[in-house]
Image (cartoon, rainbow, N blue to C red):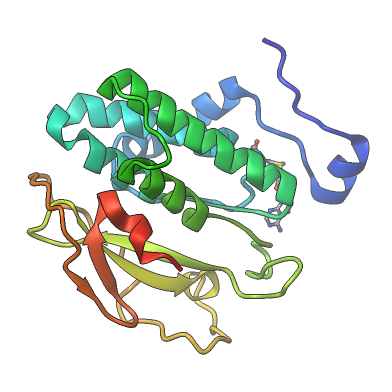
Length: 231
Ligand SMILES: C[S@@+](CC[C@H](N)C(=O)[O-])C[C@H]1O[C@@H](n2cnc3c(N)ncnc32)[C@H](O)[C@@H]1O
């Protein structure tokens, strides 16, 4: 199928918008080191100019394949959400951002239906959590200034840190992109010490079905209900 790699001459000139063809995305993801990271469900990725999501979707597809290969079926819901929570993106243009988010969500829903033989709907916790994680992790911003292009707000993300000994429990730890890049944060939100150390998760599994703890800055909840944390 023919891919449209350019939308308009103006957009190429103004935003450098030339999309990467699928074959090249796959080749780049096959690079030693990157390939292994794509097969590690919890390894974090940040796409600094996400476009309409060519890399984001390809990484998600590889991680979801890894979930099926590496884990028992009873853990697929939790592990697939962990995979989703590990993929971050920033995109300058609103229309591209929406396409990128939609592609991620459709990719997740298709995978879920194919492998878990159930169609998710908007009343389902996993559906809501997947939608929430995508909207939290893939955001509008200017990577160079680490700010929103219209409001000037700093770009904030959350680390979704798995709680040791609780295989489905996740801790939401906010951090500013500028902090990740080693710059001062001009914002009144507290930056928690150690929050940028993305840790590996335990490999054992147990589904815990209840929120455990909520505090002002660090909140913990089962990843299948992570959307309940809200903003
Ligand atoms: C060359 S395209 C690449 C898109 C995607 N990475 C791909 O390979 O298909 C560049 C994209 O980066 C976005 N972009 C350009 N400058 C940016 C910036 N400073 N911060 C975030 N996104 C940016 C553009 O809006 C455009 O969608």
